[in-house]
Image (tube, rainbow, N blue to C red; front, side, top):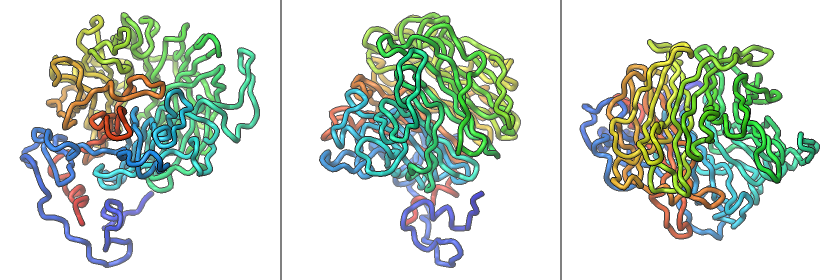
Length: 571
């Protein structure tokens, strides 16, 4: 466990901050008696106070100077002829964020990152090379370090990822002692240290190539993820087996880790021809080695469009793993592609044992209405970027009144194409009996989609999502947030997170089509919630005609959080 000295928090905040090293009696720099405050901080409701460049702003005073309370994570592109991926940046999207359980000023982020193509003109994943962008903050989200996970084309650093050309689907996590982890998928190519070719069920063969899961540990709080700290699981031959949409969880108080994903059977000529099934792999030794992949019982279907977006979370005590996934078998859609009727969320649990996790068949299912889409458009507005229907699971491990409560959130569209979309949440104390849907958005205007949910260490429930309520044409969008103090039974007024609206069609995928990612990011400490999203407000900068940046916002619980966050304004 990490030992904190009286000056430890300040040391982590500002590089070069003097007078605060362990074991020394140097005088600490004075903190400002009253950082700039915009709005009535003392009277603000819980989780409505934003950490801004020059102090704090309440939610009702947020809209103002751009990038004052929304913090740009990816750096502007300065010189496309200079291959410097830590000092400048191409676009990025599809984000994940995690906050250090020992330090609310420390958080890590990840994203699908297109810098390789923007800085070197390499395009190995379609129109662009896509890799994993890695970010870390030590000052509450005001500033972020930038890096790429090592191994991308042209990277001079040693890495077992070298030889593959594409990365996707980042998942960020911390273990109990504050160690940062980065989990993602590596595909398209062949690892240089691949042991031997494999033979797949369709008779073709290839090296252990893409669609392999990897897990990277950081020795420096998420600034870097050295190649010698990367391990692998589920080596797929991407001519026959494609592993997709992974999630990852770390056991509280133990060395167990688990990841789940969708496994597709593919044919080089015919495309997806079998599956998918929901698979899992686990580590009993803190991520050093990983088990042979196994199927989650019930996580299967008869066609290629059925199950997707699985997610594991540990229940209190860490001896049981809960898993959810989306089952589209009744709708004929996958993640919101095509017209549909209904779908369902499936839920199960598994006991963690020394011999491996023993999952039960699906314990419960409940309905959800997937998002629809039309030809060349997302289906909830006039835009064309991809929208997905997915459930997100968060578990209350606070030890409080609702300890063990499972929360599932998703975007729901019960009507036809162009009908209203809303964010719904259901909760359960046992995984079998689930509450009626709770509507998180507090307006009917516009559409609300791509939500995320998290439960903080005190049992507060946090939800963030993309939202079009402010545009009468239902095109431009903002990010919104809501907080529940009663275990998800009710939510307070929705809080606008973004300072300016933006157009999702200005972001792009590796195939060149409009894209902002398939999900948003959110993680909460007792003192603050971090919201992470893709934002196109700076599309059109020199060298970047389009593309999204990663943005963050830090929302403080209340005025009491200043005891921690005032330190970021020290100089």
